[in-house]
Amino acid sequence: MAQDTNNYWEQLERLEKLIKASELKAGILFSFHSLILGLFVDRISNFERILTENPVFMVFALLWVACVIISIYYCFKCFQPNMQMKYDTNVFFFRDAAHAFKDPEEFVEEITAVCETNEEIVKQLSHQIHAESVIIDKKFYNIKKAIRFFVLSFIFVVLMMSLWVLVEVIGVF
Image (tube, rainbow, N blue to C red; front, side, top):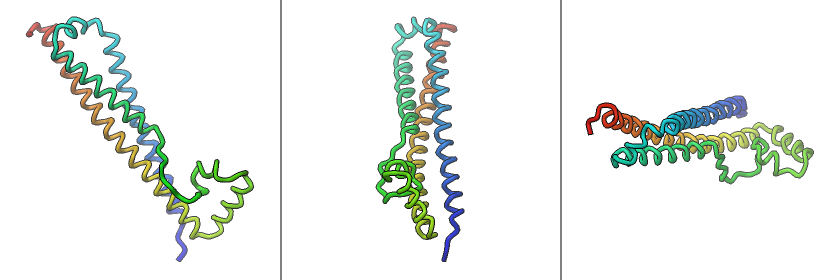
């Protein structure tokens, strides 16, 4: 029974949107980290005394920086393609289309042959869907980790600001 290849193409489109969504999330996290780091560096003189005199604040600051670095690391991993899967040459995979054929004519012959039978189109599209699904899974894993460390970094910023207000503004400690 012939399968409708439109379902496969629609699935690939949906997967492309998920890839873009994960990269958008990583970009937003970069923006928040840049904003918070920029504010901290811009106002470092306000924290100079508490940084040198209060070890708890220093611990919070170091934990905050560590969480920011780890979160940024996972954001970078989201942008880094990881193509370690082994498939037969696939005319729908960009790397194969660019490198597996010695010239454009060979590519045209192969894609024409693939598109002659619905079975071969379905097979190659299925491989492409699997490959993109693996990539998306890794991207969302990395985004999830980046968000967790972003939340932790934000908690440390709140703790640092609370301690700073208690020490510098209210004069509790």
